[in-house]
Structures are given as structure tokens and as C-alpha cells.
Image 1 (cartoon, rainbow, N blue to C red):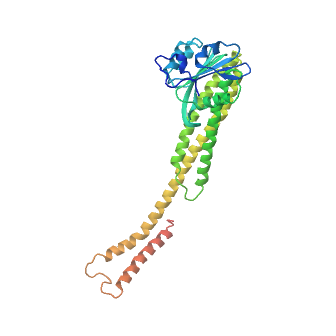
Image 2 (cartoon, rainbow, N blue to C red):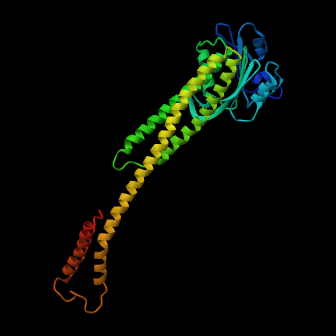
Amino acid sequence: MGNSRAGTDTADATPESGIIWVYHFDPDGTAKLVANDAVADAIATHPGWTWIHLSLADTRCRKWIEHTTHISELGRETLLGADEHMRLEAIGSEIVGVVPDLQQEFSQASGQLVRVRFVLSERLLVSARRSPAHAVERNRRAIEAGKRFPSAVSLLDAIIDQFADVVGHMAERLGAELDAIEDNLVHEEPEDFRPRIGRVRAQAVRVHRQLQQLRGMFHRIEQRLVVDKSPVAQPIGALAQKLDAVDHEFGSVHERARLLLDEMAAKMTEITNRRLFTLSILTACLLPPTLVTGFFGMNTKDMPFQNTDGGTWFAMFVAFAAGGVSYWALRRMRAF
């Protein structure tokens, strides 16, 4: 996936040897993989632009960022910063930012959010991450398959767009899960899906919060770029609109999960109350017979039916009669 060699002595290696990959793009968007030690030549090549991707877990990459002269001081601070808060700023001819992505696990995206840091200029895109990022990896594979990116902003647009697509599919999956739970809720005795709904709601809240911040940043920087008449204003605006739509979907999922959780709680409370009511009626009906059997079980002198043939059956009749009278009285009082 990258050009770094396993087993390289990091103490003696050059900073460029830690770069994950370098692609140089011709004006028509055609990409070619560049060796790490030729990164300076790739950046200086005219015309075209270059994408450099770095791992912040590699000290060699951090040294390369510290010593490169192709990005501004603010760009270096953004790439090397430990702050996980999202940001998006336009400084002169550069756009620097920290944006979310889903962590890459094998060939699939996990539900864990990671951060991708980047510095974007007209002829250079430098991106960095601590953990493998799904949208970045998907676009690298697309480049290997022949996809063209005529400008650096078009690749950044594709990375954010890929992230929006993945979280959009996540919203659909969470919505389908809520649909299944809602179908079960109409049953007389539904299963208790409150923990499952809680997990869906927690995931929706987490992504919804990230999307709100991200789309807010894109809207703010879009307004600045429009004022400056920047050529990247249009793709940034298109991304902001797509993030609005995806965020609306997650907002709907979150609201549905909240309402469904309340409805499920009310349903389970109703079932519990109904069972307690049934238990209360049984207790009320069985209490008089219990009193009768307790009375005949005292074994004291002059006990009724003690010397009467069939006395046990008479006592049993009295117990059942007491239960029947209790049931009749409860019905008469409209207790149920």
C-alpha cells in the first residue's frame, strides 16, 4: 500500500522513507506512484499536482513535516497537532483542516471515528492520520483502478464525499434496524429492545454531532471562499449541501430512536403493570381461601367438621366459596 520498507533502521533513515505513499497527477488527472525519495522532484514537477499521505504514528513522517518548506507554519501545526477538534481554515492560498473519517478495518469501515489532517494548496495535498482511514484508502484504490483527479481539491472533495456516502449507508442501516424493532413493537408481547435502541441512538448521536460540526465548518469556509472568488468555492459548497442531507438523515434516525425508546419503555411499563394487576387479582382471590385453610389448620379443640363425616370436603367447599365470593365482589366493584 505504501512505499516504506519493513526493517528500515528508523534512526538512520531519511524522513522521506516514512511516507506512506506519493502520487503525482498530470493536468488531465492521471496519477502515477512516485518513490518516496523522489517526493521533492514530484512536488517541483510542472505542470500537475502531488498527493502525499503520511502516518503520524511514524516519527520519520513527523520529521518530514517539520522540515518541509512546501507548507506553511500553520499547515505544520495542523498536521502535527494533538488536538482532535475538527477545524477548517483558509489561510492565503492554503486550506488546512482536521476532518473525520471512519477507521479502516481490513477491507471494511468500522464504526470508530478517526481524524484526517490535511493541508491543501493549488499544487499539493498533504494528508496525515494516526490510524488507517476508510475514505482515504478507498480513494487510493480508486486511483490505482484508473480514476482521475485533475486538481487537489477534487481529491479532497472525493474523500469527504466518500465519508458522507459511508455514513449515509450507516444511517440507512440504523433506520432499517429501527424499522425491524418498530414492527416488533406492534405485537401484544414485544421483546425488550431497549438496549438495542440505546446502541442505535448512541451511534446516531455520535455521528450526528460530528456531521453538524463538519457541515458548519464547510458552510463558513464556503462563504469566505465565495467572497474571495476562489475556484474551490463551488466544490466546497456542493460538499456542504451533501453533508446537510446526510446530517438530516442522522437527525431523523436520532429522533426516531428517541421516540421509539420512549414508546418501548411505555409498552414495557404497560406489560409490567398488566402482569402486576393480574397478580394482584389472583392474590385478592386466593387470600380468603388461604385464611380459611389457615383457620382449619389450627388443630384446636372444637374445630368445625372435625368429627363430621366428609368434613375435609366441607372445609374445601368453604375455601372455594370464599374465593368465589371474593371474585364476585371484585367484579361487582369493577376492579377488572
